[in-house]
Length: 558
Image (tube, one colour):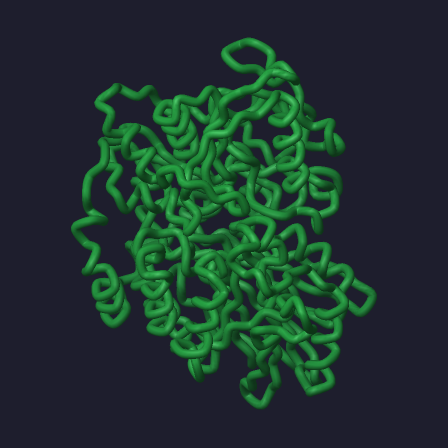
C-alpha cells in the first residue's frame, strides 16, 4: 500500500494554500468526531499531559508539545503547531484565531466535495452533548445542524445520555432515509439483535464500500446504565470480525470501521481483527495527523483519530485496484475559522436553533483574567475552578470533578458567560452531592479511576481522563500496577488517615443520582460571591516515573 505523509504546510496566508487538496484515487470519505455540540468557532487547547504507559509509552497518541511536533515534522510557531499542541497557546490563539464552528466546517466540506462529489461525510459521535442548547433541546439543535451539514453516517456515545428512547426517535424519524446511525456492538439484553444498523454499504465509482459502526463500548460504565437499561455494549471482537467477513462476502472492496473506542483500544483492535482497511477513530480527542499502520494476521489496518470540538476535518482518499486498496491519501485539516467564510445556509440554521436562547446564552456570569482550559490527564484550570467552587459552596474539605475531555478554552479577558459555563458542565446528570468517605475509600476510588486510564491493557480503558481533585494532594505512579499507583495523600499538608472520615463534594456521578443543585448553579454562585478568586492553578499530582515520558511536556515537569 502506498503511504502518503503530509508535510508541514508552513504559514498559509489563504485558504487555497491550506485546503486545496487534490483528489486522489476513486473512493473518498470525510470524517470528523467528538464535536460536542460546538456550533460556533472556539478556542481549544490540546493537552500538555497525555501519558502512555507500558507499550504505549512514547507512541502515538501519547506525545505532547515538542515531542509531538518533532514526530510529525511541524515547526514551532506554525498554524500546525497551534492546532496540534498546547505550546505558546495564548500567543498562538491571538495570531491564528478561533477554530471550528459548523458554518466554517460546512464551507470546508463543500470545498472538498467540489473535487470529490461522491465523498461520504462521517461523524464519529459525541455530537449531541457539550453545549447549553444541546442540553436544552435534547440534542435537536445538533440533529438539525448535522442534517444541514450533510452527514451521511454516524455512531454514538454521549448521544445515549439523552436516553434510549430519544436516540431511537431521532434515528427513526429525523434521520430516516437521510442519515444512518450505525453500531454493531450494541445489542438488546434479551437477544442478539441490535437496535441499530451494524453497518451500511455504499458504492463510489462502481466500488463497494462498507462502513461498520462501533459505539463507545463502555457507555453504561462511564455515563450510567440508567440511560440505556435494555442494551448491552462491548468491544466484541468476535461480532466485529463476523461483520467484516460478512461485508467482504457481499463484495466490499473497502472496509472502514467508524469507531468511538478511543485510539489505544483501536490500535489493539486493529492487531486482532482482520480485514479492516482503516479505523476512523474518536472518543479520546487525539488529533493525529498521520494514520498509524498496524499489522495483523491478514495484512495492515490504518488507525486514525480526528481530534474534537469541530477543530479538524479528515479527508481520506483511497485508490482501489483489483478489488483491494492499493494506496491512500489522508489529510487531517485544522478548521481555521478566519480562513473559511461562514456557509450561509448553515449559518441560518445555527441562528435559528440558537435564537430562542440568545439572551440566556449571552448572560454574563463573571470576568476572567486567566487561561481556562480542561484537556489533560489530570487537571486543567477550568476544572480547578469547578472543584474550588464545590468546596466553597458545599462546605467540603475535598472535591471531585469528572475527567471529561470535552469543554472549550477561554482566553484571558474573555468573559465567563452562561454559555461558556455550560460548555464545561452541560450534561443530563449534573446534580452535585456531598458524601462522607474514609481515607481508605478515597484511595480506593483514585486507584480504580487511574486503572481505567493507565491499565497496560487498552481494553480496560473505560472512560475519560483522571478525576480532578480539590483540596486533596497526592502522588501518582502511572506505570505501577492496580492498588500501587496512588500514594502520599494529604489534606492541608497533613496525611490522609485511612480510618478518618472526610467530607467530599462531587458531581457527574452517572450511576448515583442525587438531589443536589446542578453544578452550573454551584459554579455560578461561587463566581458571583463577590470574593476575589486567586488564579486557578491546576492541582496536578506529583508524578512518579514519568520524567522522560514524551507524554509529559517539559513545561509540566518538575
